[in-house]
Length: 587
Image (cartoon, rainbow, N blue to C red; front, side):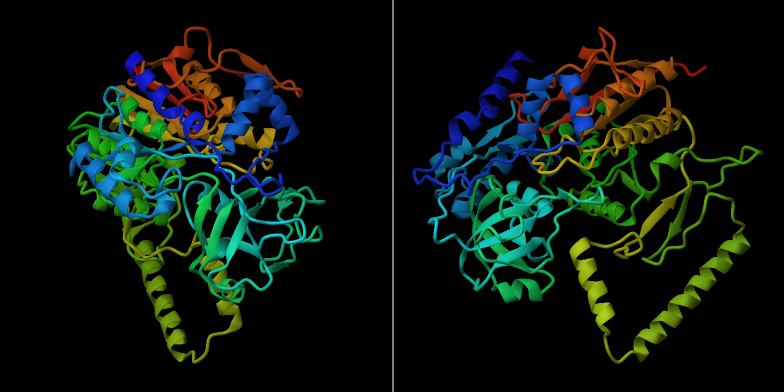
């Protein structure tokens, strides 16, 4: 493992060697990238107690920046790391300057050092592709002649920092007289606290920027410029259409190669801790494994590949569309051992009536076709009632179709509704229409291994430009929700089996506190060592809050049995946590 750590240290200290600013320095401190992550004061005090003031400052700084590399998991059932490495080298050589780490055209010599094969034991199918940054961008502006600008939403900016382009829904404001082909500076509007206690950007989409201090967020945008690009449509076009590429980002503060739609089925872009999580579960061929919160399917497919596609991997999620995403990814990767269900993880254990008869069918599922799915509640429904419900739904659908055929115009309300849907994505009831099986849950002790990659506060994801919304109360609520899910996982795994719990947050209340709850509540659980182990130790101790609440963390000797990934550490990963439990006799 020392050899692996040395390799990682060499690879991930890239910021010291590849982030040298370009020769053209912009003298203005305004047009740079130097964000400060603002926290709720009580949350900040809590994290300072957990990490120490200096350490937490480093974590906050690291969270505002992307990792300096991309991590690629190779589908070894279809290809090899060496074959993928060769293909990626050719793609990067032909992809243009924006995909080079230093902004120049890539040659064979350049790509030889750009792609590295993992030296971590067991992860030889993982490739690392170097990026670089932060770079200083010269926008060529003068005090009396500011550059043309575009302001994007915070979520759009975070995606751009990871290598994405600027698309129409993400544009909030634009300078006047911007035409197609103009060079624009791109900045971000981060949510600000409102008078009513909420958070918003306080800006109407389509706002005209004059380049003067009277512009919205003029002061707040200091140090929040993420790059420069060429407009692909005029200002009028950007705010007239509902989709499309708005700005081609050809000069970025952080330069990471883009792998969108590249080698589909052969590779999957995934954070290193997520790959380690699948290894910690250690799935074996022929086993029955449950991924309780599986979307978008990265860990699910990693587990299936580790099992050589032999056995049964059950992947569940409560979102219809997310289940479709898992199905699509499994199909792309050619995996046949994955079965997907729509199921709320809080109801993962099959309910039984007083006669100990399962309320689901023999497979524990109810198959529902199409986007207008019938929604059964948790109570037992007779077959006659179910048939009547289906008939009513069919009749309603026919009436809708008839009315649609009679309509000879499209109202403005329909247009506004469509544009909101294009901007915000499909809502809860706007399914994409594919086939999804609904599950009533699974029998207790029916799985060899269970992965609970729990929904969390996601405070370890990076780059992150906003963290003010989380409060002490909301963080505690995340922990309560996760404990309920963990209770389900414990019931589902058989004695002698394994549970792996993971999150992508730096919050000890969702990490070490969950481990404490698990070990204190279920005496038949014990922490197990993980392989590979490249993360750091967990937090030992406790935290006492001003309201008297005491949060217990790990006890001495337990910290080395979990893995905590620190975004400010040399590994340069997202913030992440992994705990592995073995299940003893439940008698």
